[in-house]
Amino acid sequence: MTVIATPLDRGEGIEVEAADLAETDSFALADPPSAEGWRAYVRGAVAELRASGVQIGPCRLEIAGDLPRGAGLSSSAALTVGVCLALGAPQTDLVELARLCSRVENEWTGAQTGLLDQLAVLCSSAGHAIRIDMRGPAIQPVPLDLAGHTLATLDSGAEHNLADSGYNERRAECRRAAELLGVASLRDAAGWEGLPPPLDRRVRHVLSENERVDAAVAALRARDLGELGRLLDASHASLRDDYEVSVPEVEQAVDACKAAGALGARIMGGGFGGAVLALFPPGATLPQRAVSVEAGPAARLREMI
Picture 1 (cartoon, helix red, strand yellow):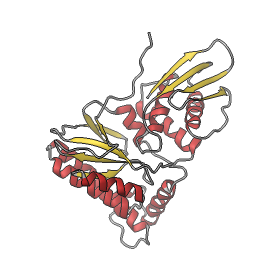
Picture 2: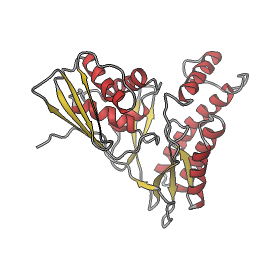
Picture 3: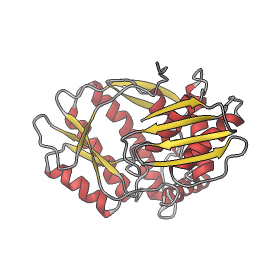
Picture 4: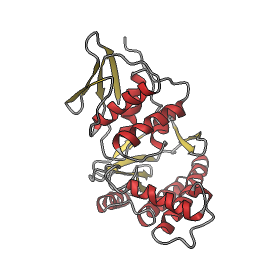
């Protein structure tokens, strides 16, 4: 995704063109009104930047990209980060910038997301996965040597919208479980015994998923791709059965990947639709409409000539 900001010598607002959607927007700098869809992210980014002290003058924003919306591929985080960088957001503290972008999601679109997508967009590096410990947060690059294997995404065809799906409900359930267990974060829970359903299943997912993250890091370092595939399958089963964020279209996409020989496949993003991520062995033929993916660099600011 690319966002180009061009100063204007007229008016007191922002003009926006979303080239890939053939849509436009315009709004006043002083007090951007609420909106829906992609416009909410742009207006929210402008408002949050100005509230943080960034000086923004009248300008034109040109947005272009090929990330599918509603597929769990962090298109909203990419858009928000791109707008912020184009408008001069300070890059001295990437975590703080990620928090600002997260506020756009929380307060302008109603999705109670954390920092995962924003940190991934801002702190990734080519050829690496990243392990993010949200207590801090602390970010650790992990070499992504797939030894001839292929990571690919397959869109389920079921578009998800975090604000309108059960995502916020799952967040609320986790907060309630933490309260009942007397811990500030579910990562500190000793178990889930005594909790009523479905809170017990939510905690079981969180604790087991944290263990799988560390196991996946170890598998990547050992170049054990078979184990990585097993962990992808286990993660998806937990997201489906304990966290309950899958839908029939996602299950069909997972089945298509497994039928094509995937070593493992899992739902991506916040669930309730979107794409799945699968790991294929060397020589495998990807399912129709699957797209191979590689770990690329972080979002960056580029001067236009």
